[in-house]
Image (cartoon, rainbow, N blue to C red; front, side):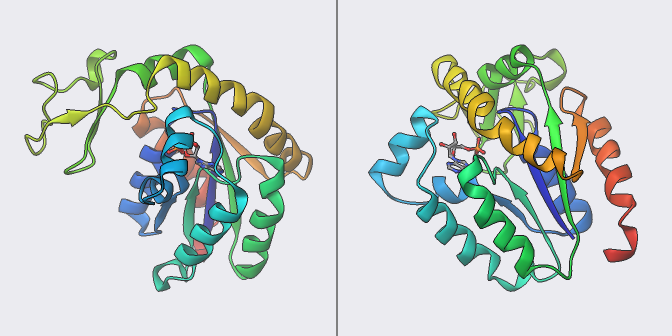
Length: 215
Ligand code: AMP
């Protein structure tokens, strides 16, 4: 089974993908993470500003990643497709994997909650744990230090208000039409992205539970 998450920034795609990966074993393919791993000044600047990276680069990175053996039985796509021009690349990927089901999940979130999540987000680069200084329930016990491994927490370079606003506007202009496109084909499931992650996860399990035989 292939699961594709499409959403506004900070709706929880990354976290829910990791949770699915942990429980079901499908590899979590985050386009943002693949791009952050590329040593290229132009790409770094685009990421910092929240601008879309060229389709040729995205297609190449995806092709390389999807050809690995761990993707044979399915994968989770986080952050792709993100604009209408990427739909043909996406449909090509789905066609190649046509023996598996493709499930598109849209995580819905308001601009205001997304903003709080972005501005408060703190990440541990050592163990991957994510915290949020603006939500009491998600703060680290000691400010700036990971509860789990004790390493210093960082703030992503693109987690600032200016970049968030640009990314949210880009989402409305570029990504929302993709949702409408797949919606018209009747292929989209919606989950409330503002729910606590364990509740959103349960909602997703209900959706993919319908495909249980395919795991
Ligand atoms: P994310 O980690 O999903 O929040 O993505 C971080 C950044 O990576 C985005 O703000 C874009 O600059 C870039 N990016 C992620 N996915 C795509 C995509 N499908 N096409 C182009 N650029 C992307």
